[in-house]
Image 1 (tube, rainbow, N blue to C red):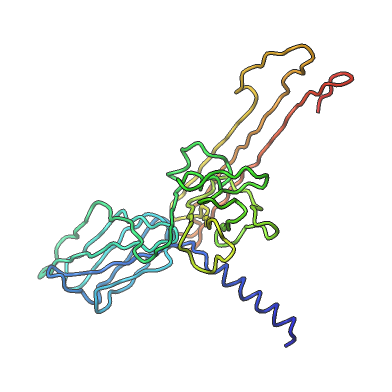
Image 2: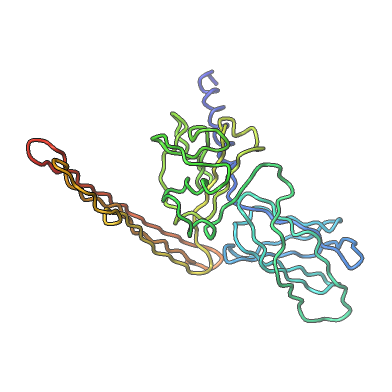
Length: 313
């Protein structure tokens, strides 16, 4: 193999490793214990969610520990069963993008006869105890009602250590770094511009499900990120049908009419609007899903310029 081919191969491998490092899922872990705080070995743990195809599960080890990796983000229910113990169900477990959520120690009661299922209502605290990175995750339910710009990267400006970059190429300033010193990912694919490190894709936040922002403590694989890493996932299908429709409008009717002086041109016409929709659901339940989205944008402006007669453009 020639020297040029070897260099090309190394670049391809490095690019693949960088892409595969981006997380689009979450993990769930915990411990199953008996009434005496002893581990319950080989307890069956199964999780389900409207955002998960089918059911995922595992069994506990000799320490009563279980871990279910690579779960799509969403709200989950976990069922724990063992031949010698009463079945336990935990609902409302919130899995967030890129995090390992620990449900802690779950206790099971011994049973001598078959009893009814025990349902535990309430939610477990969502904490990632395995990462020291400065991670913050914003979900659609948190940002869709707030007054932010339409493009997805403006979501990060809701954080206390971020603010808008007023350079022409946009971006967000994190902790004193400029918008040109970040890295951006959408559904695991990097969308950072290779020339100057600026944004190269627009994405309305209506199609965004969660955004993970890392501003410190992240791995060496983000070698060119001096500010932050913005990891975004979009909506996908599920076992439940869901849809949305939205519209946004800005024009000069929202501004007060100015007072005109002699020789001053009149206010021109201006409009900026977009109307879109998202639609998702199952084709084959637990096997094949779909999600489609569309959002055309229209901008028009009429400007009057003083000169030999009024000119309109």
